[in-house]
Length: 129
Image 1 (cartoon, rainbow, N blue to C red):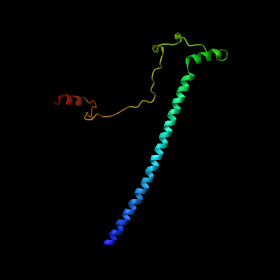
Image 2: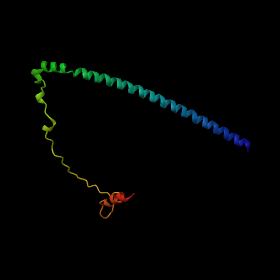
Image 3: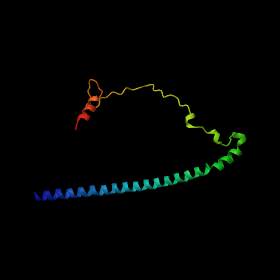
Image 4: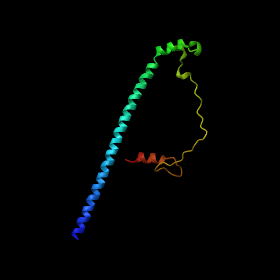
């Protein structure tokens, strides 16, 4: 009987060792993937910073003004003047139209279900010490 327990114990130890070994390799693979993703994110953030700098460089007002003057005949662009801008209150916004209105129905906790007003909740809360 003892030898059977020893055999099962040895098999259990070998099974657990195999499981731990495979989990270790899975963990190492996951850590390598995380490192790879972090390097990729860093490279993408660096690329985004370079692109933002290039965008800011290309959109300099003096450069755009010069391009507008060079291409005036073909594009007809004129420089911006302060009187071309308006105030927000000068904009006429269209009225909001809701075509498919949805009725929301619900009962407040503790409200009178017959009336559904909820006045009883307020009166009960006010009367409690």
